Length: 129
Image (cartoon, rainbow, N blue to C red):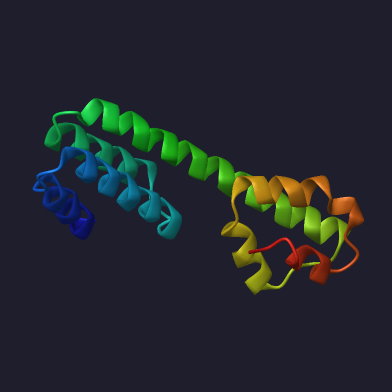
């Protein structure tokens, strides 16, 4: 977590505020994608740090909260997709499960919508990027 805090503080030093905000949003997008084990307390600690570090902290915190909600939604849809693949096609291997978790929500929704058309895991893999 200290590395994340240092990164936030370094981004604060950028001269271009728009670029600073974009980089911060990108940083948090990747934090939430790569560190799915982030606890709610850690998440809220990061939000508080941003609110205290940045002048526009509240607005930025709202943007990050939206990213966090979307990540939670994507995680739930990915888990549902895996359960449906298991039930209607076949139990997927770990590499397929990992790929499912890397997909955009729209891709997962497409897989769910077409689950009754898949006969093999190879059929499902055609939708995985």
